[in-house]
Amino acid sequence: MKIIVTGTRGIPNVMGGVETHCEELFPRIVSSDGYDVTVIRRSNYVKDSLTEWRGVTLVNVDSPKKKSFEAIIHTFRAINKAKRLGADILHVHAIGPALLVPYARMRGMKVVFTHHGPDYDRDKWGMAAKTILKLGERMGCMFADEVIVISDVIRRLIADKYGRREHVHLIYNGVPQPDFCDYPEYFRELGIKRGRYILGMCRFVPEKRLHDLVEAYIRLRDAHRIPDDIKLVLAGDTDFEDDYSRELKRTACENNVVLTGFVKGRKLHSLLTNALCYSLPSSHEGLPIALLEAMSYRLPVVVSDIPANMEVGLPARCYFRCGDVGQLSERLAAVVNELQKHKDYDMSKYDWHKIAGQVRCVYDSLMSSPSAGNPQP
Image (cartoon, rainbow, N blue to C red; front, side):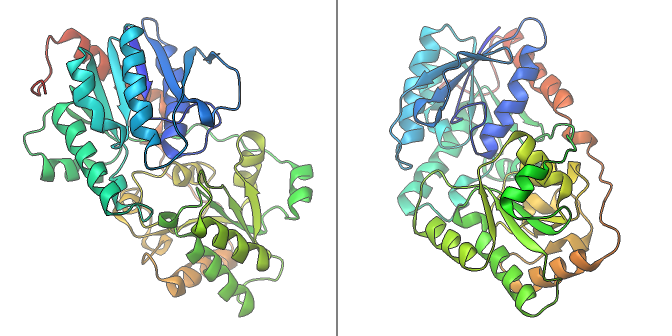
């Protein structure tokens, strides 16, 4: 079975939730006999010369690095490439690329669409872009042979909007087994100490609301409500430098917040192993992999009360009202000053091996059926 994947910037080691999802999922798909997976990458995000990684074939296709156009142009080119490669199934990720699901169907391919969240709710998009993204969601949900959603919040959203939509599969995001480790040289480079920092880990975009986390930290520090040696570490960066990311970095630097840039591997694992707690103040998520990673490392977490975060089912003390910097400060102070630092979470439904099996079942069902539950466009 030949599966071609598009909608991701690429794998491995490319920043983003969809990218992490694909990096974890598809090597596990190909670990079973009978599955040939090719991921089509956006060449401007690729910093390697790989043509294969952990059993997954990698193909680079050019796209303009302009956030308004790159996804749709790349997806159009990727669909044409997938047809030339003889795809049995085209697997499209995210609602922007899903705009071209009808085109892929007209080219004779069976299509699986994974809905990672209503991206039109992201603060960075203007009205025109939001309209296009909503149309992409509609095209994906109405015309894909099979639809996968990563959270029950998204499943309910689809049910409300597209009641007649059949073949919707709830398959959660996952998290790998934690790799507990230390990296003393890296910590000396950053100027931080084990167990003496609050960790924020995500892209530097408005909807993640890292400015709220920075402001909450400044309030706690200036009011001497946390020890003087406690630092805030922001792990991540932005794909497109803009006024928001520049202002965030400026404010962070002026207040001795540690900026690591985009990190993976041992550096990231050491940050997760030794953090005092993790915070995600975002206003929009699908099902945040970064939060699941922090939980897998048994970190106390403080997150906004948006539906995607609430679905994880944390105790009430872990949540604060989205945008309420005062309450975020209170929650962080409580975590920093409590004695019990490590938490036990039930991570069983976020197991990537189980998730890969569920996705393979979707593929198998689609290939064994002459037609799926939705009309041709």
